[in-house]
Length: 406
Image (cartoon, rainbow, N blue to C red; front, top):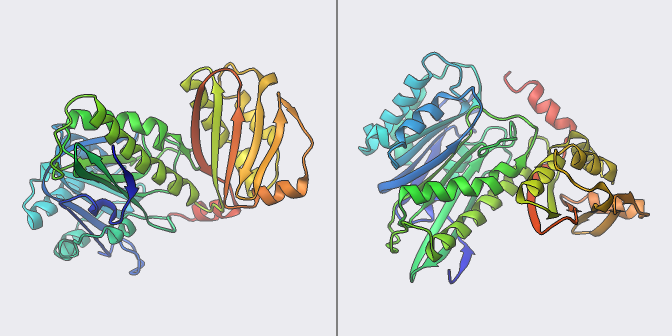
């Protein structure tokens, strides 16, 4: 890979993709877009990862069936209603796919469908059926409106795109995501739609995505709740005309590197925009015996409600970090652990070899008051490392979720 640089356009950055988003009436607020569409000019290799919650949204079930053959050409999504735990849920999700056939001529079995919002409320197809023509007309080479239309309690849209080179051909990956609550997954996170113009088999695409989420979206925790509708899908239409990736090698490694850049970028955006959050928390663990140990320790710390509350209060209560390490279920040596906090204000060591060390409380407050804070842990047991992302726990989180449905 000769270069890797960010570009604009989100899911429309890769060749041959258009996207749009409008308000169709599912959400009461007319200023909130609630209906999104992404379309490729040609059929794509497709792959996905989904929630492991036993309670699954109807769109998850339909999408899994639709991409079982490794092919898709469009994504349709609504916000404001999750279409979960409804008797006619799958029928409605299939009707959403058929709406794409109506306007774009794409077979409904080649459509990825997703919904996000309140669980347990019937989803009426009528507003979407009435607005599908307008939605299709809104398609453009900019995915900002689509990124807005998939939002629920998100405060900002989330998108990223990169360019890189494979075999002399310029290739692109773009993505949009939503999700700031019900996030502590063991598969992916929230809704993420990724596009690329790379030529790659669906088998290698699935391999790349399945491996990637283990160290990107799987390492995000907002509140410890796993959603019913988590969906992360990727479409690859091959229009970059690189030599098709059908096996592991240099090109596959370069593709995975570019994909991981995008997924980590989105993971941080999701964590920073967590419901009620005031800051992004990144937990970096090094010196672990195994990758599993590093990941479990990082996730244990980032999931801790007490750690998250301390970060909200800018309180350098490092004992809570050690506590979370101690119940991570890994055989760490407590007497070897070092902990420090870092932000743009500087680095603050607080623990060496499992014991506290003196530090200036005023400086600690200044470090932890910044909107991005690192918790750095050295287990001093080996050469493995991992990172996890989360946010602080605030009063506003309770406010948002206390009346989310009403």
